[in-house]
Every structure is written in C-alpha cells, then in structure tokens.
Length: 378
Ligand SMILES: Cc1ncc(COP(=O)(O)O)c(C=O)c1O
Image 1: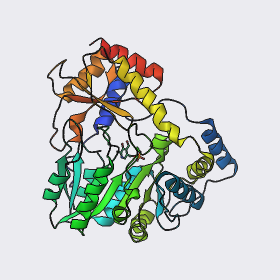
Image 2: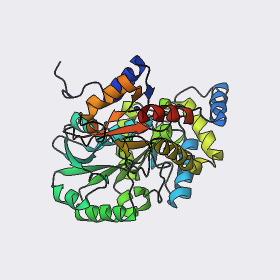
Image 3: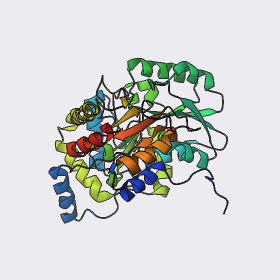
Image 4: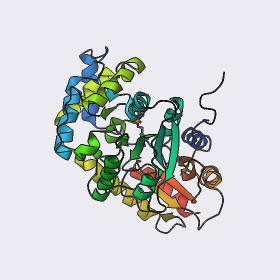
C-alpha cells in the first residue's frame, strides 16, 4: 500500500513514554495530569450511567453541554455564541482540528503553521492534499512574527493554524497580537483561521487573548478546545469547536460522517459539572503554583528555565550541561537520570535544535519534587 503519510512514524510522545516505563523513569514527557479529578465529576459520571445515558448523543453534541459552553464563553469573553448553530462537541480538540482541516482544505491549498507546532496539524493538512508551510516563532521569546507571516501569505494560502497559549513553548499572546491578526485578515479575504486554544484556562500572565474576543477574526475562525486539558481528563478525549454558523455547517458535514457524535455519558457528566463549576478560574493558580514549585526546585540545577506564561509545560535550556542533540540527550536523561522529557526539535519541520527540553508540570507535588531532585544531580 502506498502511504499517504510516508514521513510519519511513531510519535516521540509514545517513544519517550515507553522509554520512561522501560527505565522506571519519572515521566514528565507526555502532557497528562497524574493527580485525581474532582469527586463531583466522578459522581456525575456515575449518575449518567445510573440514568442510562449510554446511547448516541445528538450529532452536534448534547444541547445541555453546548448551552453550558455558550454560558462559559459569555462569562469569560462577553461574547454571545449560539449553542444550536455555532458549537459542535468533538472527540477532543484533535478531532475538531482534523474536521476543520477536512472541511476546508483541498489539493494545492497552502496552510501556514508556526513551529514549534503541535504535532497533529501538519499530517491532517497533507492528508487532504494541502501544503503545510512552516514558519518559526521567534526564538527564544516564541512570539509570532506578524510581518514575516504577512510576507509569506500567497494567493494559495487558505488557512492559518494558531495556538495560544502555545504548546510546547509556553508563550501567550497580548492584545496587539489580535490586532495584528485582524490586520492580516483584512488584507487577505481568502484566509481562514484554526485557533487552537486548548490551554485557555492555563495562562499565568495577562488575560487569554482568544480570537473569540474579536468579532472580525471570529467570523472566519474555527476555535478548538479540550475538556481533557480544562478538567484534567485527557483520556476522555472530549472537546469542542466554536465557529460561525456557515463554517459550522460545513464542519458538521464532515463530523457526522467521521464520528457522527461523541461519548454521550461523558458529555452528560461535563454538562452537569459546568452547570455548577465555579472553579475554572482557579485552574491557572493551581498550575502556576506547580510551575513555581518545579522552577524553584531546579534553581540550583544546570538547566536554564525559559519563561512560561501559559500551558502546563515549561522549557529548559540544557546547553550548560552538554551539546548533544536534544533527542539524544532526552533519551539519555531517561535512561541514566530517571526523568523523561520531550526534545523540542520534534516540533519543528526540520528538527531545529535549540538545546531545549519540554517538561510537563501537570503532576503531583511529590512527582515534581522527585524529578527536580534527579535533575539537580546532573
Ligand atoms: C496544543 C494542543 N492542541 C491540541 C491538543 C489535543 O487535545 P485533545 O487531547 O483534546 O485532542 C493538545 C494535547 O496535548 C495540545 O497540546
């Protein structure tokens, strides 16, 4: 069989997690929390099962969940989204992103994304015949160079994929970034946006500059979210896409033949949770405390921590320790020092190596302290 994705192999996340297991290392590589979720949410899952909420959900998702999301967007951004026509519940942000790309991209369309980029964007574009165009975030600030972007847009550019707060970089946008994006869209009427905002609740500085806040940008955007990140339930693979009615209509044409609908039981539980959730704004402070714990515990190490304004990842420059390529160093760190991390070069088209590793701090304090102790011995 001729591969449609000949360059895609096993992801580094699987490789590093397997290596961590093999060497009994502390796994700060893959991005998932290792602390328990709220009892209220667990009880709601039980309630859903007792209420036999186990059959198909409506194709766009349960309306009670979509209404809760609309209420949450109104509270957070002061923006009214129609739950009937502008929100679709998906199997995680990954399926939302894939579906938006499938709905939009045809052979020959160019899609601009910024490296270091989350790994699901590029292959989805390739599958639909699109041409990924990778620009780089400025190093070491990991900010978008809007002038460079403007220069790289051609009449074939159909889509920009943006991610704020950024995984793996931990960088976030300010209000000027939204204005720059708006100017670019004004200039290029053929452009659409996928704004990947899965870490919307994990921002430590300033307020989250969602594209939903800007009416003009929103009119051309698919904005994707993940309950996995917000409610610490990555294994549930539950997310959603917010997009204007016309875009949502096309999105749902793909969605209904891709999955039709997603996990009804978990949708019931999350809808119930959001109805009374008054703790979403505490997520950032919980993670900020973990970030600071980890960073402070590494103060006497030979790693240099880069700024982390959002997400539950922080980057560490290891150039004081060795000049080995980052992938080699990450593997050796796992084998010899007992801590697994992700080499940041894997998020670049041509494996740009700035000697930086990504550590996930969505872990218990004990795990973070134990990992930092090991890292301080290097
Ligand atoms: C930037 C980014 N986008 C999308 C996703 C995928 O989210 P989900 O697990 O809900 O599919 C992740 C998960 O790590 C992510 O970090």
